[in-house]
Image (cartoon, rainbow, N blue to C red; front, side, top):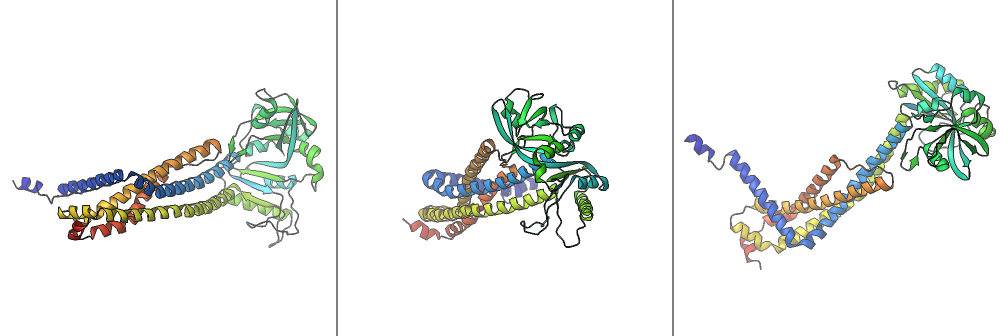
Length: 430
């Protein structure tokens, strides 16, 4: 008997939970009824929150997409790699006139390969825009004069025909490996391997077709062609270089378990000794790693994302103020309803929660619509602009929860004001 009496006690935990859930269910039902009663006003009220959530969500997604795109581009091009440039190292600041001429040679690269541990492959480079002609088809693309190590460093070898070889480099052979985009522009769907092409007026034989890598951020990585570095030097860029083995760039790929920081330090030490650079002097070369590029790009995209989110948040602020104004109007219009509910036994907390829930429902609905619009815009950007705009589950949940928080924050004052009305004065209101 005692047990039965205890279970029937309205103050027991299960009863309190049922009462709590029932109260909130009633408040949500009242909120939707109020929204249906004034549909146009509700839509206009949600508009500010909808635009704000749309802008903030899209800004976050664009920032995340830019970071992902840069990381993906670097990984496609070759990860765990040091990039050497024949230009004075002026640090992270803008280029400045140092009086030091940039220098990097194939002999430097051989010394690095011999003295620096954990190197997987090296790739000397000379680059130049080239004009290619085949049977009336004419395209312009960037040619890379390099060695067989370039394919290893960049994870891009030939999947039809062959890649350039050391024999091609030694003999300065007039052979070329075409990227997919160049091959399609010149030959269409025809297999180009074995065909001839004129590059800046010089006949070359196509010996291979590169693996497709696609494009990121509008940068088509298949719009390229590979030549032996000796051929490039001898026929196209030799007169523009200071020395017989000068380079414009070089890639040094390390083993996956090797430290890029240590590798970079070792390369800088080797080159500093070779060029007799004294402490405090500007070096005639620049060495950067893929890790540094990723960190710098993430820093820049982080700042851009913060600026975009800050600007977009103004729309949310305006939307929140709109919610508060409309809720104040709603409290004034429904004063008699509030008085009637209090006369029938509603507590001040019930009235407060009623208007808080109504504001939160307005904001959540507006935020959900804004989230859907942001997702649709992201899909459009990915399909038509080749730009990744990931709207993840975390971003979506955050947008909805943030919308609810906006409703609770800006609906708080009208809700408290409603709960403090005198029942007698409220009932007298016409």
